[in-house]
Amino acid sequence: MIPKAEEIEVASPKAHKLQIKIVATAVCHTEAYTLSGADPEGYFPAILGHEGAEIVESAGEGVTKLKAGDTVIPLYIPQCANVNFKTRVTQGKCLMPDGTSRFTCKGKTILHYMGTSTFSEYTAVADISVAKVDPLAPLDKVSFLGCGMSTGYGAAVNTAKVDPSSVCAIFGLGGVGLAVKMGCKVADIFARAEEVGATECIIPQDFSKPIQEVLTDGGVDYSFECTGTVKACHKSWGVSVAVGVAASHEEIATCPFQLVIGHTWKDTAFGGWKSLVSEYIFKNIKADEFVTHNLSFDEINKVFELVHSRKSIQTVVKI
Image (cartoon, rainbow, N blue to C red):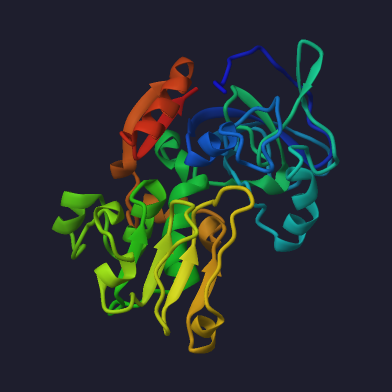
């Protein structure tokens, strides 16, 4: 399935909703996953996109913390955990929290995507589904802080809480995997990764034995699975963090003894952040180095070519 450009109508915001103008959107591999048909929550027709940087156009009744002109980043997971639970059912059906859609095309209802739908000049979101950010932040650079970088960096810093002496393995060196590296105080891919501290970069397919035996005698202290595969390394006292989205109906399995003797499995969503923009502004994290391509909105299909060919770490589409 190839994304298609259409003229749409975005209805005025209802209570606790916002209409926002997209300035730039990044493209996550999750969109390609949805287009593949493997996503159990991939309903069509829908406006894809969940990494963006935006400006509030108008606010509905009851919106008190945001106003027209505010700079925001959409959040596919609302900031409040309790509200997140309430919105999860409707968002999983590609609808707004009130069970409606604010998009139409030629009189036909168009669905939302992950509560954000950033592949559009204008979109509609719930007021809880955005984070207000510093207006000085360059919107093209911080657009992908709404998912990939925040998720990977937070997986190391917040979820695993890696310590400086840990031995870590990261499966997948896309935008999320690189952000995990940054969280482990290591950044960039292969040759550049080795320059700044990665001790070894390998391709699992090059080996006939299990990757945990290739890496060390039995595994590592922390492993981060950023590709969606359900096969990761094990170690009796280690922690494995599932970051990537696995295909529909995939299951993770292990010998129960792995858990009895102390192995820990964790998952992470959004890396436990509300926003990383302030960290970027104060240069505590890198973002510019992740952007390998800048494209215009009418080139958005080229992004998916880059994703599938593995030629892009992070592509930003300016709208």
